[in-house]
Image 1 (cartoon, rainbow, N blue to C red):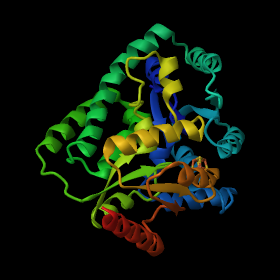
Image 2: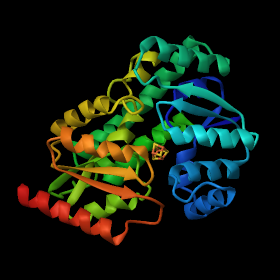
Image 3: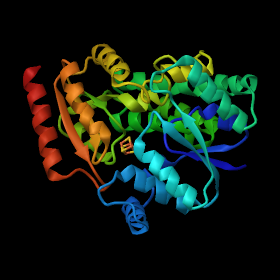
Image 4: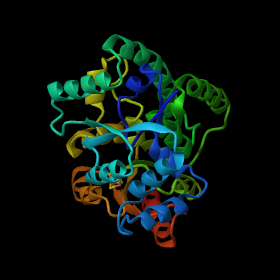
Length: 330
Ligand code: SF4
């Protein structure tokens, strides 16, 4: 079976319906045994040092895989850097199928995009919806893991991040992924509850340093909400809806206001004391912090990551002080 790479969450049901294996290139980069080496390879190829590590990592991850049939390039609704990346990949002889999330969330345009993707992979709506029904069952299991995180305090912030972020491609086999989620659920339900008093939300793109989750847990807090990762599960409303509506409800590629509504609702739903807003160095989304701080009443700490390799001393200190402040406020 051919493998199909992509750079951000796309309607993965279409790839599975075509009998192909989806590969989220972000996951290949961040789980690589030596992600720093991937960044160096991209910089040797000419990617600027002051460009986003995810773009460079995706490039080298893809070049290293070697057996990807083509990639789906999200040319609208993700990131302007992706457009430049696609041009480089074209130069390298890699085929890509374009896909867009219309910025205006226009229903008709999104339907045209999804229909076009189905045509490109030779699948029809009926088959895609059959697969979606099966995948939604797995998404429901992951949604329960999320509940085990914030309602029952049995799943760690890192696990919550990992199992939700991996719903972009379900590690290439959603049935096997569902079985792994079942096994974790059985084990997690037997655990003692986490007792950290401060509850945090994590907002923004997934971190380049996943060590942050353990760090906050060692300092009296827990991340009980991973905003974008949860969106990757389509949990906010994508179950039992047709594929067009499900990917219209998905907030990440649309306006910041759409995301803020979701964030505010979850702050209240999950009893969150403070928000960590993560931004990636050289990413346009860093500017959004101005709006995030203005439009969220809960205290917000903005942190920035650049390359994999753990939290730097300054970021650690800022997180510690933030947790202490929230602790005193309680
Ligand atoms: S972190 Fe920002 S710049 Fe980097 S790929 Fe994501 S959206 Fe683009």
